[in-house]
Length: 126
Length: 126
Image 1 (cartoon, each protein chain N blue to C red):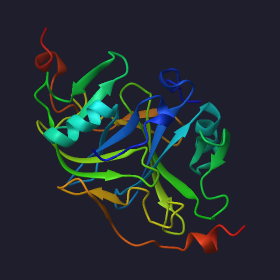
Image 2 (image 1 turned 90 degrees about the vertical axis):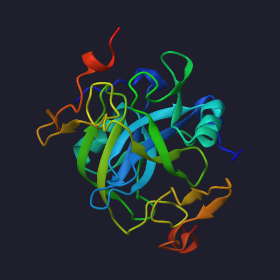
Image 3 (image 1 turned 120 degrees about the horizontal axis):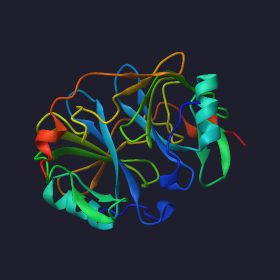
């Protein structure tokens, strides 16, 4: 397996997920060694959930998996970029295409950019 | 100041830096509240160095500052995207335009993408 430096963050590295065509940043997750290995082996973006303390293949619940088209590693091997095809068109659990839908305006208020692609209530039925 | 959730990473949030025109991801840094406030106030990307334990305005040594053109915040307020103009054309201390110049190939070997824009020995003279 390609070695990453997991030491700086107590066993994790940040993973930035970017649309492989538009370059839009969709989300940032974290990977432990198992998530990194699973991503390499399956070609589906897989993370470690810090809040749930579990391995987490993005889209298992919603169907909105991320098919990895290209992987980049940074200069000091402690951060990853995944260029992906976002199945379903939305990465965020709120239904927005990107998790980064809040823009900081000049006056430091927040503007919501874009509208949700799906209704979370429909997708995450309990 | 716009509130971020610094609790998940012991006082830090990841900050992804993206070229404001091309969308290329240049680097990922970390911000503490002071770095976040300094970035908002000065319009220059400022981070907290985990290795040097100090506030760090990108480009102070090399001259390659990052002029912030747009700021995005994610759904749960614990990650930031900065869209910047990269002065000098290169974000990485190795002289590469982006820190993410290592591409993982099909056979899981590493390919270097692109050539350095500057010679680090010339820029970081001691």
